[in-house]
Structure formats: C-alpha cells, structure tokens
Image 1 (tube, rainbow, N blue to C red):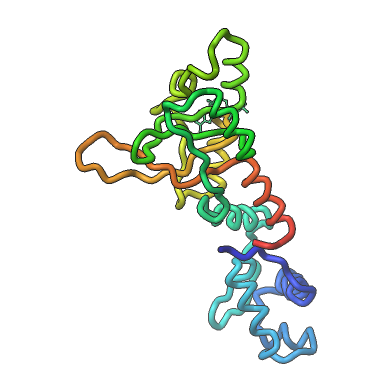
Image 2: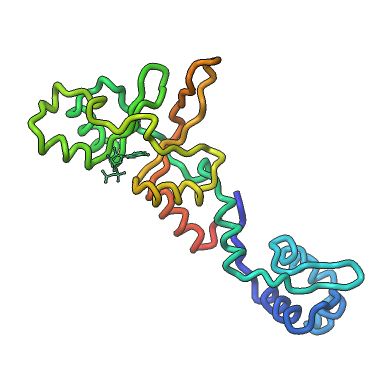
Length: 217
Ligand code: ADP
C-alpha cells in the first residue's frame, strides 16, 4: 500500500520557506515559524521521505526540484495489480455460447476468461464476440465458446506484481477492457501454461483513479 502525499498547511509553509531560502537548517526553519525543532521533526521527515525536500548534513534542507507531477507519477507506479484486481470469472472451453452469455449477465462482467482442465488459460471472450455470434447463423446452445473466443497466445495478460499503471497501458495499447491476472503453472519442461488468479478491468483502474483523487492511497 502506498500513501498519497497530501500536505498539511504547516508542511506547505515549510516547503515555501525552503524553496525561497534553502539550503536552510531545521533550526532556522523553526525560528521563522516560531516553533521548536522537535515540533517540526515529523513534518521534515515526511517531506524528505516523500522526496519533496532533500537534507544534507551540515548544509540543511533544500528543495529537490522534483515537479509535483513526477511525485504523482512515482505514487501511481507503486500501486500493484494485486492491490486493485477483482476475482476472475472463468468458463470452461466446452461451455456453450448461450451459457456464457448467461454467465456474463449473472456475474455482471464484460469479459469472461476461458480455461481448460486445471484452470489453464486458453482464451477470452467479450461482449463484442457475442454480438458477432448473434449476427451469424449459429446455434448458441450448440456452439462451444472455444470456437468464438480470442485464443492464446494472443491474450494480453498481467500479473500480481506488475504495476497497475503498466497494466493500464497494456489495456489502452491493445484496446481491450480487461486483462486476466495470471501466474505460470510449474509443469516441468512442457510449454508455458498460465493459471488465472484474477481479473483487471478498466473499472478497477477508474476506481483507483478516484481513490488517488480522494487521497486514500
Ligand atoms: P468489448 O467486446 O466490450 O468491446 P474488448 O474491447 O475488451 O471488449 O474486446 C475486444 C476484442 O478483444 C474481443 O474480440 C475479445 O475477444 C478480445 N479480448 C478481450 N480481452 C482480451 C485480452 N486480455 N487479450 C486479448 N484479446 C482480448
């Protein structure tokens, strides 16, 4: 979990003082604010830990010159997929297109991940795929979803430890609404197989954006 930097009024004042008068010692800052050094210590610790100020022994505090945007970028990149993901909704590859459409409605999701035995990822299927199938003359009850899905190795995936930022970039770049969160299955020497352990959607990213905006992260 990361902490989004929201400065208090006093911390803002300290930053302004250091910007205009730095390098400056904590004693001098305390003097200008009519406070003791001990009172300022936690504020100075927060400001240096967050990278806004830098401290050098015997020189004092100075402004790091890092623009606010790059501090926000640092924060955003620290949030991991595992912090924001949802549980996956999966269907077996022999499920009928009809049953998958029902699952999509009952589970209230826009993308289903398709798995074979052992929870191994074999494909993904989304609303547009079902709309396409409705245009054609297919028997929704008879056709297995495996005939319709986008299949591996063309599935764009993410992992628990990837940054939510990197995963969001993939969604934009590949123009998809959801990524399966996967981890490799240890199957000694055989071709790499992936197990689905979660679902990352544009909704997760929107929720993260709102949380960041509210200073909750
Ligand atoms: P929608 O159908 O709501 O527009 P998407 O834009 O996510 O949803 O899906 C567009 C196409 O991309 C569909 O054909 C779908 O099968 C495929 N798709 C969905 N998710 C992925 C993914 N993670 N990787 C690769 N292809 C995907």
